[in-house]
Length: 410
Ligand code: ATP
Ligand code: MG
Image (cartoon, rainbow, N blue to C red; front, side):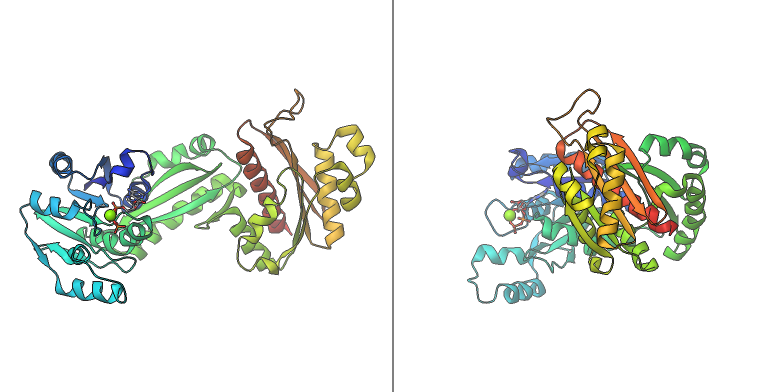
């Protein structure tokens, strides 16, 4: 099945908003194994929407539209589509009732009522997240058009809970995907290591993706039932685990900090943070996970050399001989916070986030992340020139991943 997304809205063409609806839907389609060949964007103009529909129906089996289902004069998607596919609009009594209940207390104008008008013969997609229902029509055998509302807070759940089941029912097989999350190995290195395996696979398939400075491998199987598809993915995931080893921080986990949370809770360990260039980002990300108080002990931001010495016991000689951005300082910071806090694991970050402050020996983007346990200290370094925000994000990820690895070994 080939799908085309038509996003309707003049504000998209004016550059006022980005087409995040299409992005979200496309991702969902990929997970369902439905190919999306084109995204079209068209203003709130019936003639141009007609033309866009004409092109799309010539090259797609499924058309998904977003936007223009609301009550205002520029919301013309439903009317235009109904006319283009030769369907009359009727007032859906059940939707009218729902609308009245949702609007109760607020004045109902005739343009509000038009949201309950739907094309004859459609499947109604009830909207529990807003007022305008969506709908689907089969315009000819095996060819479907689905209309979804524009606001992302409605479009996304409408796609997940209404369009997705509708699309899944069109096929007699299900698609199941599992995500292997990787930190510390780039997409091309992962691809290189897995190419032999990936080339030999047909169902399931495996494909790596770069994501926010990390990498993930999606393993997808198609089968009659979800259990069957899951069972087909499992041995491939195991094989990939064996090939890639401990750069894999989790399967179907949301983030490195979530993976850290899992291992810390399981092993009943505690962690504390000492940060320089990330200034609290590591602590923030660790505590973004609900329940972090079980294992997050404390965090300090030591920006100046003086603070590093006073709070963490970093020695003056180390700072003089190697500088604040050095593996020696990172190790002493991690050890210092571990001893100060009494936590099982201390982690640290020191680096040059830029844009200024770099030197030829210590360029912008260079950072050290350290970890300390009763077994000793370990420091890693990375250097890549990018924005201040990305450097800090990357440095924080490195520290959190060090904590995760250390916890796994304890
Ligand atoms: P409403 O009932 O709010 O009028 P609607 O279905 O008629 O919903 P639109 O009027 O087209 O949708 O868009 C409403 C708002 O939703 C836009 O102003 C914009 O903020 C957001 N929106 C619309 N389309 C998109 C899109 N493709 N991607 C992201 N946001 C969108
Ligand atoms: Mg609108």
